[in-house]
Image 1 (cartoon, rainbow, N blue to C red):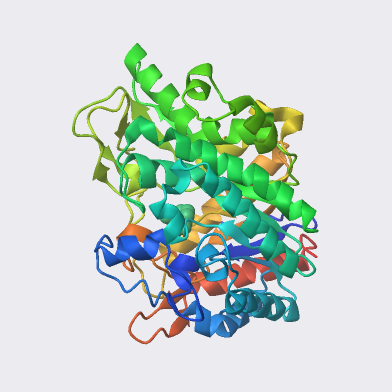
Image 2 (tube, helix red, strand yellow):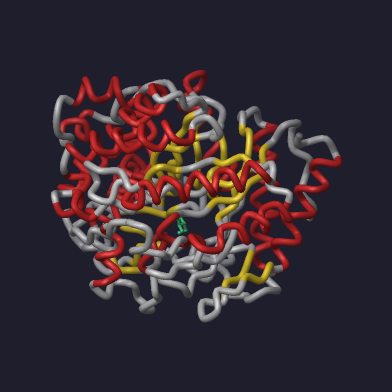
Length: 453
Ligand code: IFM
């Protein structure tokens, strides 16, 4: 299999996030995040030292050199909110802003487009302690912070991401308690979704007011496959589809919740908020990893798409294992065509309302230190499926693989390796894997074939 040629100007990139890489958790005036506190409570399964991460805060120049070696057009990193505004509101930490200033300069000096995400899950701890995303105020504090970052960086940053994967924050952080802040509220977690969406809308406004342009959001999408023929299976799958995909995409792209039942569960002046949430975007980001097979609830079902922990029995749907496909070391099925399916689904659902798309994340955890042939096969398959979606008329402008380096995979710790570059967590030494050389060659040949600038 080879990688087909992509359209002219197609953007080739890699993604990462602050909590997963930076380390330096209490350096240079950074405040604690909810994730720092969660880790300190022993919630990282393998006990990985999240205060150290991959050492990106110190070694960012080395990683930018690696990006340059790859020939990447863009780097999607995240800004740590508590590094910039340690208290979540109030005084700005100048050293925090200086760090991102230096990082942006370094990327620009290498001709790499900086594409910062403003929220990739590391909520400042004081805000988490005041309710986090259950508290409407957090959305307003986010908008203030977005404006602060844009005031400083908009002169050099040509692409902005407001929020990463609000569905995962809602489900894993507030409904099921697997991620920070560890709440187990099930359906009472829904306000966390609404307030993140509101933060996105207010953030778009604040970014534009500060002179930023080319703004999008990164939303996870999974094609939901129905597990059986029964009405209960259909209802379970439909509800899961609503909760994971459309409860986030519809408000952003259409200004409506996918059904009145969901809207009725949301707090605040929902209609007014939806006008803010649906502020026009320049592009929409899709994070794709795998499809999800869903049916009627069944007591001890494993939620295999979220690392195999057991779903609470009282939920009105059940996740089933997808058989017949190779699995990543996270247990996620490798289904490249699911990416095409997702993109076509988005185009069909939103038509003209859908702005140009970017794949803001796609990748896999495989435990092959450097000779990572399974990652190469994964990426090759997904790029093929992406090209098919473009051939079917979906307007996709770029692809960011997850991730440049191995990093801290949240609750899983250091054991799930998603990187093109291997990290030795004892020495923090970086070793490019075979997939790094492969991706470099893909980008090179795309440019030689005139697909990229
Ligand atoms: O590592 C995460 C990332 O932070 C958000 N999207 C999914 C990735 C893999 O689980």
